[in-house]
Image 1 (tube, rainbow, N blue to C red):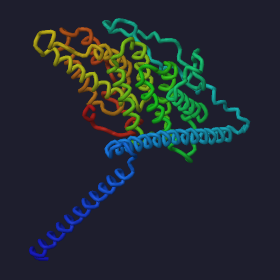
Image 2 (image 1 turned 120 degrees about the vertical axis):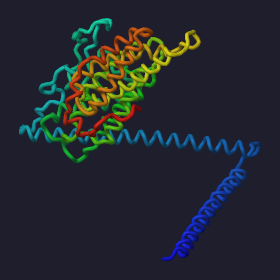
Image 3 (image 1 turned 90 degrees about the vertical axis):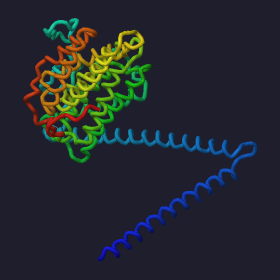
Image 4 (image 1 turned 45 degrees about the horizontal axis):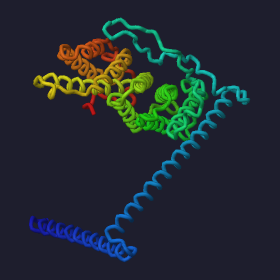
Length: 408
């Protein structure tokens, strides 16, 4: 085909696209005009066309919100039914494998080899010493038990979000107790129910923690975090979670971290302690620990940069301002990071080393203006981590990375 013919073809195509665009615009204007005429004709006496249009828009929006709420409620109910069916199949398979068929496998009995090693051990010193204090808090509930060890009556879990967290926690906890995920395969009939439940559990925890006026019960949140960490590691049918599931889980971890760092409410220290322990328990998962360490390091380094910018400003109270609430909250994140860094092997060793070196340099720069946070940051940056040289296959299976992506 010659160049002239090619030019004619391009011209025809351009004219055709223009005609289609004009026709589309004409239809759109016609529809808008018809809708305006219908609104004007249907308006009641004593109300202008504009007021009637706003009334109809508000009514439509309300109906949309109602339908959305109904749809979400039905989705939760369907997931709960899937959980019950899945547990029934797991229990049936466990009994048949046991050979007894009499229900001798007890869903409430603890897992074999389970321990409280994933319980956070907060250090009780002022942070100025480099020696560790390994004294643990009161024993956590046994991972295999169904009911929460909480003297508070069940009525305390009165909100819908609290009940949602409790239901997902019980399902995943029963699943771990019944199926013995370490040694027995799970049915493949509905392999998505486990990752869906994990995502819903973490999302419900985030939503419940956002409402600081009705903060959930600490034992409920801690038990949910412990169970979620175990379920993420074990996965469904022994398979690691997919990249999409891990992306949803990581988003929830980011939101929990940001809730801890940015909470500026008064008398927030009990909430901060609870959120910090939740993050530490979630970091007990070999798959979640690298994600949490990376995100916390990014947040801490970003805040350290903000403090350094404050130090660079001219002297004067009107210029030397910084977020005091975030400053106090950063110590909780540093404590979580200090708990998670030992044994934080897995993906991103090189990126983690660079972030730690950056934190160490910033700690030295802040030592004069902000000595306390500089000491805490230096403790974290100087803490040895086997993750700089070792990469576990479990974390690498989710998504292998030669380096960390940019902090988000």
